[in-house]
Image (cartoon, rainbow, N blue to C red):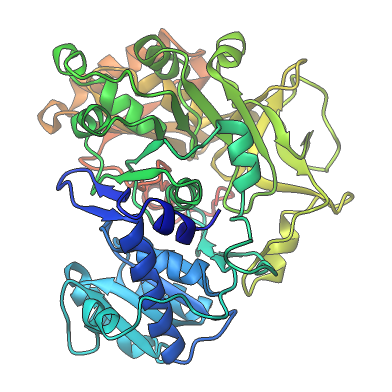
Length: 517
């Protein structure tokens, strides 16, 4: 449907609630504010097909900006609030953004990127002003809340996380439909999978600049549900928010599960989670022990999927399927799965290779990067595309991911997948987070290195390293066990759940020619 319909039928219903503060924005207010911002953009000279960016922490007005673009034929690009000025400026230039909305909390970064982004003609700030940014609130107050007479459906252009290089914009063509008629991207398949409906209350514990939290929140708005946004993830706050707001659906990443499971049992047991009917998770493979523990705690309501911002294909499975196929990320629900070796030859069930999806209706391209767009296509089958992940399927067609191809360790000619080792070590009670990758070894080419973020930094040292090595040997084949363990007070895990290993590996490969990207 169209958020204007809910603004008419249920204007006082909460569209957005901020979990910590309890601040609310109704559907009437969301529709009014998005219409006002759409008019600001139109007065600034933006036309259908232009690009708007938002660089903000999670806040109540985020969706006004997004829905203004989705209802006026514009591309919306969400930028992480944690980026440096240079990193943000790269995305702004690459996307050719003509408008930028930011917040007072990011004023220093926002001012620092002005000189490098001369194409931006409209700069507004939520909650304050700065020399180069006017007041977002004042700009909206000067406009009418009536919808534009020529509304059309816009869409997202989100950037890849850049774990192996510069982020790339994932660009889809604009829908050729009026805003009040056009479906949001992924709406039909998501409703078919998850049964989203008007009475749902959705908890979004992750930053909104990521693809899944932003898209899914908008899909829930599209069916008239309430979206509860956590300002930042906190394990106990997540549980209390489920109880306080009667949450029915939440979207998670495995690191959130780990942190909730490591809460003291008396803390976990004090919250009523009975309203939850669906806990969706993705972004990274979930350790088998972690997921089994979550199902034992929350019941068989976990639903996992594997996909990407590019939407080249999707696998999915529910809790009962997972219990029958532990470790799997599901069977294909869009596209046909193929597993191929480095030469592009298709492999049988049980053999690991590069994961491809076969689909004829994929329409995206990497913005300004035809070579990157071509690089994910199978050399012999133009309708097969890969996200660069390794895995295998079982005899029933269920997919098991090994790791990113770029992260695979080759030690003495043997392929070792870091994800399996990380999944084992993270279950140790002294471990907060862990990264595993290959480091130089003169005899074997590479050897397995683990870098651990301990729960308590004062525990870091040789004794804990020995304990973790012994722990690994009880769970892994000897050739997979780390040859050494180092400690770091904070690993560079992005808030979408993905581990940014590149800077960690670079410490160890300095002065070497690495075949590992």
